[in-house]
Length: 190
Image (spheres, rainbow, N blue to C red):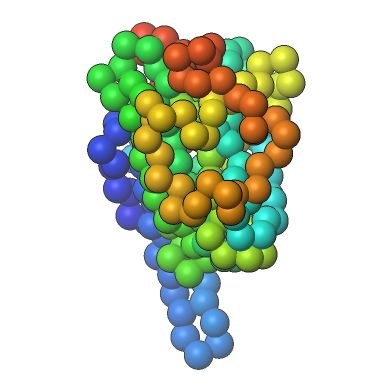
């Protein structure tokens, strides 16, 4: 596995090795020991989630507050998405900045998103299957979100706004300025 540190510390692109031949391919999609070695500590993932979406579906930007904050390891099994993580740690040198990475069934890339970041993705190909691991269970009382179109975030979702499909929940999220956020002093992983 190849680990690539993005311009925002803590957000990591993971490129697994793909072994292919005329029969197909084999890939290790997760290695706890390799991730622990790279990070210098262990993240205890406790749940796997999967969604299937059509082109134009935008899910996010979502996060959970403590004590239910989540670290995520996300990937695309089939299709293609633009995956986005936004630093929402007040006081962070990269507060309000984001990383956007194309994840696809073809490139097999994954994105490691620690606690303290809002996360979302837009689907760029029909019938895309998105999978992710989390280190904390869903907590409705701690569930929060950000407006996907907050101008201060300046996220280029690569599709025209009128072509996006959002849930009712995602159409009425607060801006970064209005949202409940994390404090930078809080560890990325604890």
